[in-house]
Structure formats: structure tokens, C-alpha cells
Image 1 (cartoon, one colour):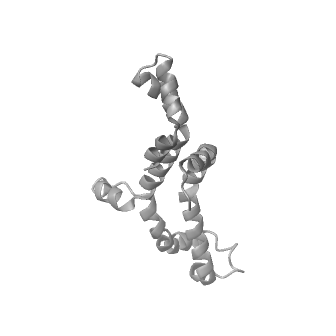
Image 2 (cartoon, rainbow, N blue to C red):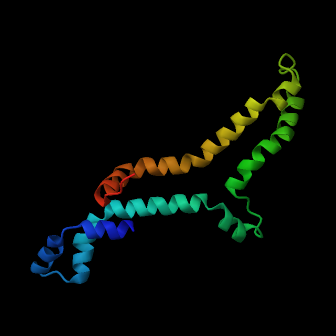
Image 3 (spheres, rainbow, N blue to C red):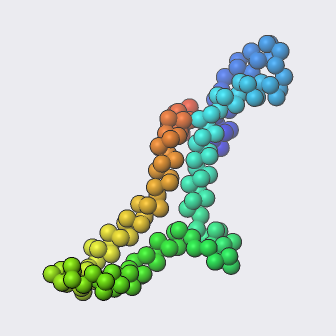
Length: 149
């Protein structure tokens, strides 16, 4: 849909002027239309990357037998494993943590949510970095295609 809207909004004069200059169909597409569609290509690429990054169900179907853990599935397991990790950490550093209290750290719901939110932020970090690099083309494409939201 984005490509259709983008190419539909390009003026027909671009194609006609390329034909007058002697360019064929492929040359017109390669030299005139494709450079103008850079923003739309970046936008569709960004949407496809985000879609595949968040597609946990399909990746889990294909990846279950290989034994490779998925990042999104490990995000939910992070707080469940926190008890064993914190138990080991507390056992090793008991002298430092005597004043805080062992059980307070392990059962504090704010600490658990802090760990879960940090893991979620780290999982979103590649998407944020990718968007940072293609932000200008993304905004330009949205303005050109006329998507209202």
C-alpha cells in the first residue's frame, strides 16, 4: 500500500520527461523513480524489520527444535530466574548485604519490575537505534504518501 500510494502521487511528468530524453522503461525506473522512492523503501524496510523482530509466534514454531532461545521468550523468564540469580549473589556477598536484608531484595516487587523493564528496554534498543538512523527518510515518506494518523 505504501509503495502504491507513493508511486501514485509521483507526477507523470517525471516519467514523460525521461521518455523524451530517450530513457527506456528500466532506465526510467532505475534512474528516476527509484531514487525518488528512497523514503518509501526505507519506511517499508523499517516496518518489515519491526514486524519480524516482534514476530515471536512464527519464529518460535521454526526455532523450537533447534534449541536457540528467543529474546522475547526469555524476557518473560527473566523475573522467574531472578530468584536463583539473586540467591547466588546474596550468598556470595553476604557481608555487604547484611544491613539491607536478604529477603527484602528477593521479594521486592519494584526490584522485579525494574529488572523486567530494563530487559524490555534492552530488547527494544536495536529498533530504536535503527529508527534513529532512518528517521529523516521515514518522516519524509510519511509526508509524501499522505498517511493521516
